[in-house]
Image (cartoon, rainbow, N blue to C red; front, side, top):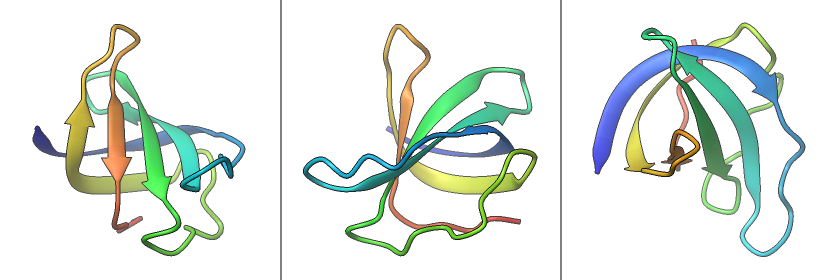
Length: 79
């Protein structure tokens, strides 16, 4: 399912370099929910300088999970 929203970076996680490489971080949405974002850095460039407190907008694929879900992030537009 495609979703569009924005939120604040709460935690920047260590990059996942196993298999398809992903830059990972936790994003807190405006409604208070948190989401894991997995930004594929094999398909798009690494978001250099990403840090806690940054605002990030996205329109990407959402995958439900009991832990809150995952955003498969292909492109980026940090604000």
